Image (cartoon, rainbow, N blue to C red; front, side, top):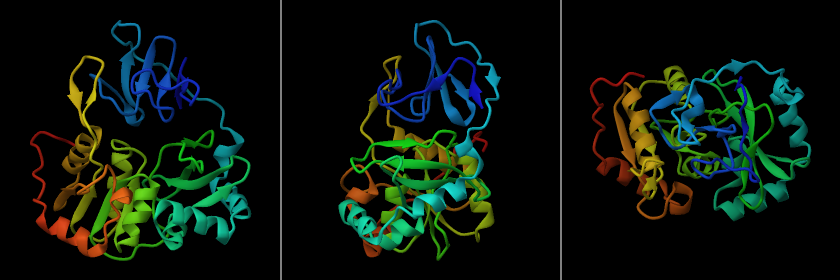
Length: 280
């Protein structure tokens, strides 16, 4: 569903609040930003902002007809798989610094028509609900009709479960030997992640958050998206919980930690204390 009068941002028309070219929605006088909070939350899409300085009004939601791409995501991915060669996948793995096996674990395939890598996104029941695209230059967008979803492995291996951001960080952490749930953004798909956790054996959960530099909201206050998004998710999970950050660099793929290093970081991290009054 799309709010009436809104359209997706793009590289040519980025979000007027966060400046990014993906996930957010804009209209002539309003924006629904997936990254920068405001006083008005608009479901899982993000936060409602005014562009012209007036208080944002509510958004009417209309149902648009389903695009052809929306109907059979698994079949579309199977078609993309025909374009995928082992050599191309190995080149991607070498460039990202992860293994070919971890990319296959999360379903990376080459979409020739988009000239980009395609990664399935899942809802809280593990159903594929969209396809994330990643160009060889690192640009990110989605196949038209996609819903935001989680990046999930094709099979679960062992505890603890690590929740991180993005498909390439997911692949890097899987290389270290962990089961991984990848979120589409630092604040995306909390309900879906909780639903997946309910299907897995109970045990400790680790949020491997990105370490973001402070950013500025439209009102001038500062916030750190990765850190705040990790705490928001941790508050919603009723399990023993730790939040960890890479010791250098912004994200875990850049950090390139081994199992031994990540185990040490997890061991030294304190248990998260859930804030009172927070509901999932």
